[in-house]
Length: 431
Image 1 (tube, rainbow, N blue to C red):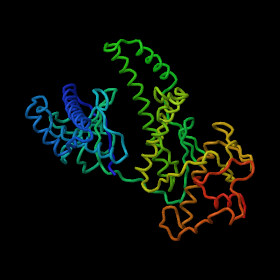
Image 2 (cartoon, rainbow, N blue to C red):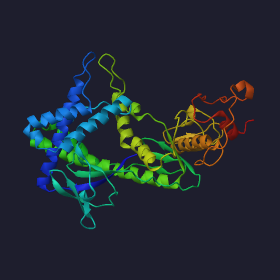
Image 3 (cartoon, rainbow, N blue to C red):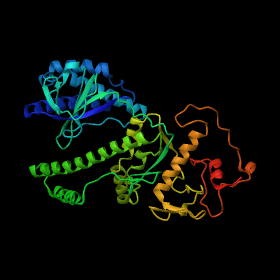
């Protein structure tokens, strides 16, 4: 697994212009590749692959002086990135590559980096050698990984430049205590732990939110193409970038803390892409509660659900378990009874069977931890140990057990619930 170590790039004005030209070349080549694949239809000849596009790029560089003045590495790697994006699309892990526009997603990749292309000048200053640009300084905030073979230069909407060195990160070692934690992700509470901790991703302060609202109203009144509109957009991008940086920083600290404290980290297997899909519908079949659903989508994305799990999988490989989310918010973590009416509100849970009361998110996190602990410990041995013996197969019907998992007054339990009936019987004391 390849990770990145990103640093803040500090180019001079002349170097910034050269970097923008590299970004323009990469964007131009990428859009040409998108156009070639968009032209394909059933019955036509297949779109050219990476090797054929590289041969076409050589011909284009010979015919176009503007393209020939750029770096071959930058342009070829843009085609390489597009080929990887198409492979991810056909693999079902990413969406289809789309057009790139100026000012959004600017960047390029450099490969074949030599040992002397990155050097340290002082305690907090380093330099990296970029083709046709020269030595560009960056802030040495931490040690650059050894043996880097490639790096990527990017520019965000705020206008900040970054350089990210590709390297294989070292996973965080497990503490070896056998502790299991359940993490319930939500909108009101970003992450609730089974230990009772409530973690919230930072957002903009009240004064910043009011300023953002004023800027959005100002943007709506500004004339398209005017300098005033560009200035307002830059101010909005600065506030949005500040919020994104805070969220990323919270995700990094939270994921590192969880990976250091617990051997097994259990999360719900949520389909975030489907959950944040728009509810607007079509002209023939318009959606309902579109504005409410849009607000929910913004809340989900603002809490960094996907990024938190992704960083946990990077830092604790093999120690993150994804649990079926069915019934986790309706089940009592004390007695195991499933009752839909037990959740009195977003934050309040009260079991009508055993009388347990507590925070609803913490109750769900404990159910997630119980499901992970049962799945791991049932095979015998510690969570990180190898399986010793197989779990005995449960009986196939409730007629053989004489126990009904759906008590009177309960909400019923689906067959897809993450906690098996044997665990519920052990918690309730039933034979």
